[in-house]
Length: 109
Image 1 (cartoon, rainbow, N blue to C red):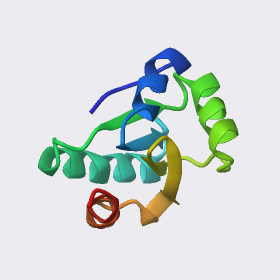
Image 2 (image 1 turned 45 degrees about the vertical axis):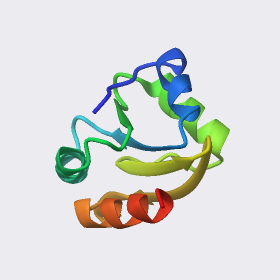
Image 3 (image 1 turned 60 degrees about the vertical axis):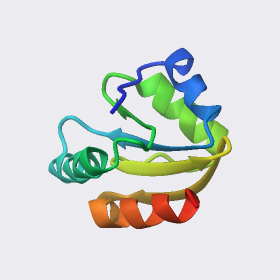
Image 4 (image 1 turned 180 degrees about the vertical axis):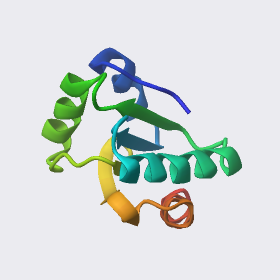
């Protein structure tokens, strides 16, 4: 798990073939649950590049990601990037370790 806070920290991830990005809120219980699911996923799949941000600490980066992807900001939110482009996104209760695993493995073939 890599915490990112600005565009300079985020940009290198876009150069990877595949990476999973998570936006979460530090104050929302739904976001806390989704972040827990993300954590479960990363524990099992340490070989999959991931990054996350806390919206309250990195609002400009959160807005930047929404702008470059065209995906409306939500929190919590998961975005899977493949070759620098968003290929899948989910929010709120749709973010489960099982769903993350299924989706990421589908694109990593």
